Length: 263
Ligand code: LHQ
Image (cartoon, rainbow, N blue to C red; front, side, top):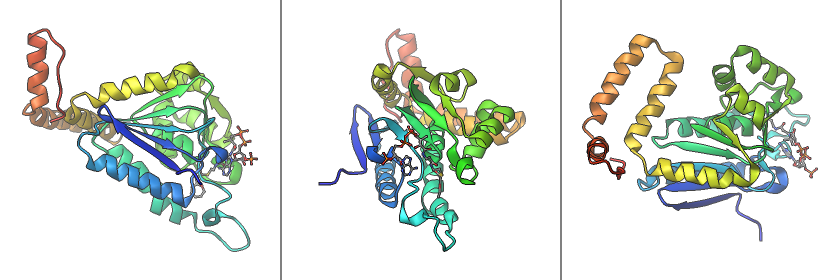
């Protein structure tokens, strides 16, 4: 029996989505895209799922597009790679960034091409020490996609972004942490425990506040101080009316841990 290309579990307020084509380093084919889209829709729909953890099965996180897939095979006839981006990759990246719940990627091994930028699209990226990031696109004559040309210069600056994109060298998880490309790098054996602890903590947090933190931080990439000050005022005004704000303040005054409902 063939294994499902996406594994999905939800408990304790968070979902774990595992890319599961380990024999191909979890590279994407159409079937895996479709299963992932279903998993993400379920996460969107279920209010009790308040955080997401994305990881890969086996020794890799994701090697990007499956280059042996019929849909992208470069043979005699020209192939429209824009179709795969419009249909699958771009909606995926947009949905994860706009998801009003925190997304964590636990990078368990190599993350290459679209797989690297999928990992970097998460709100928090935690990687195993043996993991690595490869902007492999230049090796096959392509540009970084899945938001790579947006994320890289913003995360590490133009000089490093350009080096990564033009050279396609492997960047170790330790260097990725040092460069500020990711949140942190941990020992391999600790990756999933740490990632689950984070997901549990975020899943039990003030979800509406978290959604607005995402919104404001991401808006700042293309915004001005003036606009951010206005946005912060507007978001704070709405968050001040939430049950979680009341609970947070009450818990502080009563010197106890808050119990956030996500509302
Ligand atoms: C693979 C792949 C793979 C198939 C490893 N496909 N089999 C978007 C829209 C439309 C079209 C085009 O692209 C895109 C976005 C993209 O993602 S373009 C970039 C696509 N990805 C790549 O170019 C990465 C290709 N892979 C590699 O460079 C290496 O495999 C990395 C650096 C990821 C890992 O290297 P190693 O650790 O040395 O592993 P390996 O190369 O031995 O791979 C293990 C197996 O996985 C191997 O199969 P085999 O049968 O020989 O054991 C590879 O052929 C297979 N594999 N990536 N993308």
